[in-house]
Image (tube, rainbow, N blue to C red; front, side, top):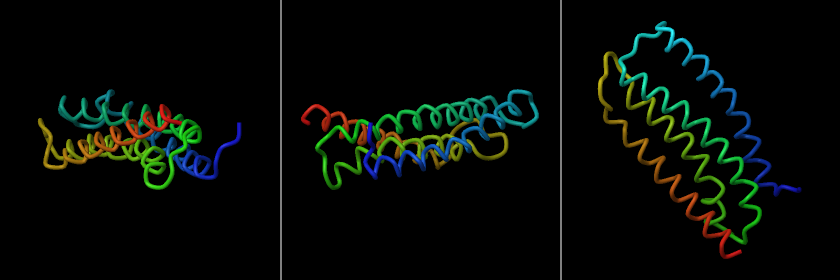
Length: 135
């Protein structure tokens, strides 16, 4: 299998982000041990942010290979390649940012970042899926 330069570059950057996800896993072990004071809501959002990062980075790597199998060009090609990786950043960041603050029990105003990530995920997967079906 030969990857395009675009896929190789995006996949390389994504693989480097796994170190930050590992750091998040270490942080989560501190949270579940009670070493980091958090409300139940904040613990739930921290778990969700960490899980979304890991799952979406993995899916984003798969999308790079699949994008090479389409005939998409221009903006559509980049939406297909970068939608899921952008969602990994935005959704996990949205969970973390919207739960930040002392004794928080509900999302703050930064919850919009989470929804922007959901839109990026939808755009990326719809574009890539359509590109695969019409290739």
